[in-house]
Image (cartoon, rainbow, N blue to C red; front, side, top):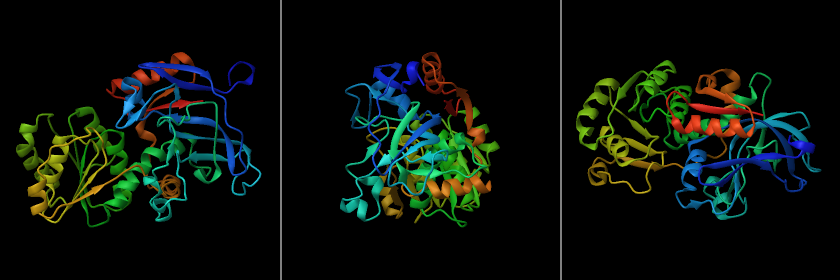
Length: 353
């Protein structure tokens, strides 16, 4: 906490400027909890907001608290909260849907037009000493799952939702485009879902070596040049040594999506997770002629219980993904974001509060 017990938070105040400043919390509603933040991870979207003040159609118009991958300890519970108690360690789902609209009632609450999502303007995020959040979006962690692992449930949920959307299973050979944090967690989930074979591609040797260590069957280094797609598809097929039933694109640029569509077998499936570019130019006609199913994927829904189950049973180990740790001071917040933005050998940068 700040001076005089003030709640402090990391605010994105302007382009490339983060400041640790006081953050006044809303009052605790009957169904809310107050959580003392303990672990907060940096996501690519956080860095993107810092560098450009926007992401897709979301524009930062006034100072905003950053951060959305988080876990902490319950400090206070609202009068109607039954399932959580002070002292419980919880992983936090960062998006609050309206739960009333037709989309929510259809069970696809991740697509709610009224979604209030941490650190997506104008909603404040969670890189703070304390936050207030609905109790039903706070999930109790078993004793053998750390708070850092709890914070990793958020990126892990993206991989889990992608694998569910694409109906991954023990008969699906999977190609993953991109060995960044989301490509890697998607690979871990695909393994947990019993996938027989996974090939992962990236432009970076270091990331590919990490993917191999984490259980990729084969890795293929690719270029960023779209002219190389033909040759790279040959390499991908050799690496898979079988049909590519499903490709999951965790990058989302024209080259990766073109490769995914063309590498996948006739009657196969491509799931687009990454949002690298808003407009892609891809060989859609030939993909449609081969009856490739293209599945869109946005955030996640109902994923936290299974993520926690996978972590608790050891079916998934996210600990190797956490490469850098920082405390919560002005200097460390700036340094942590610089580390994350540089990439290099950083995968997941984590704050310990």
